[in-house]
Image 1 (tube, one colour):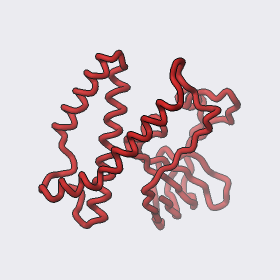
Image 2 (cartoon, one colour):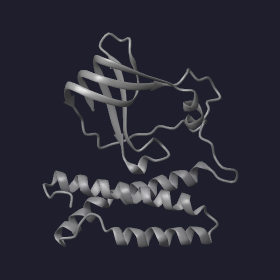
Image 3 (cartoon, helix red, strand yellow):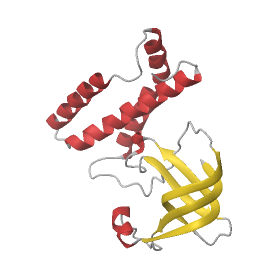
Length: 196
């Protein structure tokens, strides 16, 4: 998304330049600088990451600002738009490239496990258009909150029986459900069926 306009007020933040080895973001932001400017013209550029991106990115909206004169910029914490023009582009793909040399692998594991998991995730998502079609034909909504709660409870208990961290299992499968829901909703929207 992009917003070109005039801002009555905008509050920004930035962290100091980092050097390897890089610290986690939650440590870095403790030393961030925050400032507010009023009556400034410039451009907001933002992306929205879905809930299933948790761990890869921060879910929700993420905005950066640069003033027209290139003297003010940073991560946006708050703003009031006086006037502006909004543009957006819908992105249906998200490509993540990992250099296999730098990918940390848990002791006793190899990248084949990760490859298999990613392949299974792609296969599952590939079924979602047909799932959306079946739900539409049966007059069923995309979301079934009760079924999702039962499924999450079931996989958490199965994971617990295998010695897995319950919160990690819950968040992983919740992200898979969210991704499936988004694909189904997008398909129904493109097909003109709405996203109920």
